[in-house]
Image 1: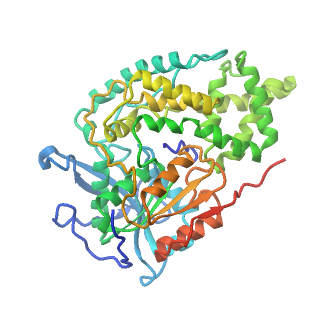
Image 2: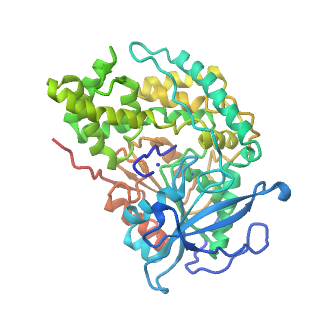
Image 3: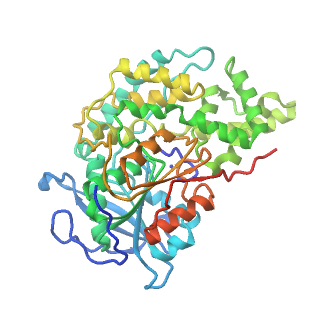
Amino acid sequence: MNRRRRYLPIGLLTASLIFGSVTAASPAGAADPALVWAPCTAASLSEGGFECARLTVPRDRREPAAGTFSLSLVRHRSTGTPGERIGAMVFNPGGPGGSGLSAMSTVWGSVASEEVKRHFDLVTWDPRGVGDSKPALEGCDGPFPVRPTVGRVDWAKVTRDFAARLSTVNAACQKANAAIIDHLGTVENVRDLDRIRAALGDSALTYWGMSYGTRIGYVYAATFPGRTRAIVLDGSIDPASTLLSLSEGGAAPDQAYGAWADAYPASAARLAAVLSVLNRRTVRLPDGTRLDRWTVRDLVFGNVAQQDAYATLAQVADAFHGAIFGTEEERQQSGLVAAQFARFQRDQPNSNAGGAFSVVNCLDYLKWPTLAQATAAVRDQVRLGPAYGGTLAASYSVMCSGLSVTPDPVPVITGDGPQVPVLVLGASRDGSTIQSWTGRMSRAFPRSRTVTYTGGQHVTWGFAGSACVDAVADAYVTTLALPAMDVGCPNTVVPQQ
């Protein structure tokens, strides 16, 4: 769900075949204001041709007098000639709570293909309540579950205790952000996306949704089927989901771990030895801190869904191994590196509980799990993902603890849905959104085609380094041509000795 990507600052009935860009009407029927673009001033965007703008949108689509949000947008103009330009392609990097502005320089600089850049302005935004959009949530960082440092884990107790702890955090977040917290759900974000489309001057939307961004994408297609041009859903959320069933993704990092371990077998063996020790005792590092198994697991399993983190994760495993098993000199040298990795992890909030993640998900679904249901879901995910399934499922299943927001539920698709010809991208061992969710998204759009990458990469277009995936996606957004059949693409990772 959340891309958990710390190296990149990581969701009915005809498709329009419009290739040009013309002025379009806003959802309310009145003309949207033109966007005023100017060079970006943020450090990460101040060079490279990025332009920023703001768009004012209603805080509540049903109450025009309820106030507004000021959305922060960024774009990079297409590199092609005016005749080659098709329009804008808007993307959302995931979350809920992901910042488009934080992702933009990486997506433009090293992810988007030259083909895409030639034909499209690339555009993204910080969703309402997030990042540079105003007002934004404040004081809402989520904690990690408290798990015993050694020995057997009583996951029922961990879940109960985490629900109580998160309840305090979420209640404080809601009190501090009372004026906006009921207005941050996906249904409102979809209306914002349509206003962005109209303000960009495109009659129909070209959209790339990553992870949670696929929920925005499928709801947009269901809400505005006549305003879609090309929709790419990459690393899909289940369109038939309930809040409880989101916990099915708990075991995903365990599945992706196997893909990393296959690529770095020596480092994986060292990591197994490290965890074998840390399951019995903590280890003192040169800076005086105690290394425990959860710091290691949170760091490794929180990033294993991204192939560009593989080499760093090997360094992590090797450093922790050296700190425990090396000679006296190696323990000192490796221990200093291990301490840096450990400090980095301990400074991270839980990106899968609290904040916009909890708020948006709890607005999007009507029924919230009971504690008994949450505990059962955690037990199931521990069985399927013994290394990390319990941690992630606990975060997912009790995320609404302490909140009293009024749900603004998204539509769910349990059978055949919109006849919009979307492209669905997924991975066989996706480390964040499981493959069965990709299958359900494919079934929800009968005219869709699916490209499955064989590996653990979460969000594959441009991120997996797969010419196979990229060729299909590039062709679809530029020509609207889908493959005749679903496509399978091989893993691109070169195994290390």
